[in-house]
Image (cartoon, rainbow, N blue to C red; front, side):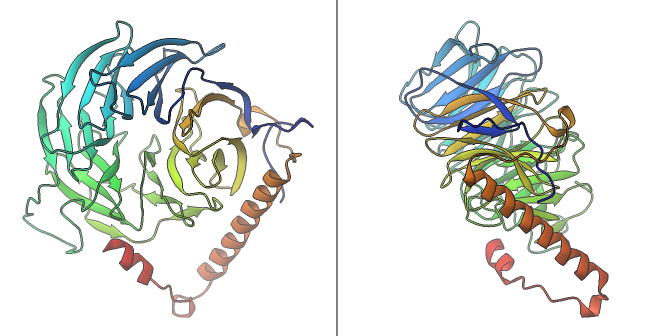
Length: 405
């Protein structure tokens, strides 16, 4: 290992290490946390969606005081997903297992709108367009439904099997075939492009104007909010609930220009044996990605280019959701057994580049393994790329075909 970028470790064992500095536990939660979200820039609030049906609002600074609780009319419905409105940092959209989405005003504790998708089933995912309050909603129904931010009415249903005028690749599906756990607007083309993924092994890229699938990223298995896209819209990262090849990076730079069926990501990131529930790119430096899951029960920050773990927070149970604030200086995580916390984040450009070793032997082992795997993979790729095409080793694509079916 030639370097590890992180803060100097104290001799005392801690549940947060590396570039994660001060950690504050969000108090008063005695149930599973299924969704967490920072308010947009200009606000210091963070929302926590709980399995008891409540949304708890905390200050993200200081002692992280609990300042409000939003209780659904049917207070036994778990809150499954959260997104703040584009137009106001005091308004938040919440999806519920009962199959509805409520738009809350967090200051007055009032429900402003109730949105009921036309297709029944639990709401498991939602996203708000980055330039307006249009809301994409998905879940058990296998459809993606778009609600207009102004009229608050359903305007588009994606996945109804609408036939195409032309088709370049017959393998491109018309819809999802299992539940959807994540939807994501393209950050630069939100009026045209939307992504969705779940249990059926594919990420679908939708044209909102044509209401058709343009592209398929094959070989994923999402069980949570585990898609993110860099600000420029050139790379998409996906996190799968499995024991290997969990994190994959996809090239989407030619979004919307051609129908394609991608079976191979441009990169995979080592992540031990933990299955992934959530992942998110750092707001200011997309070389870093926060990842949470179960088995190892931790929230980690990975350097996806250098191939090592830059920081880690140990938890009592699985991590279901995570989110950076607008500046990327804070990271909130939530999960099972009342897990909810905020950590300050210090990245490489904010500190000297030093070799730091933890007093925790488990983290030392993780760092060494991650780095060794990364170096070995780069060497293999360099050797293969230097060979003439007819001498390069053949690649078995059988597993990808199986995943796509």
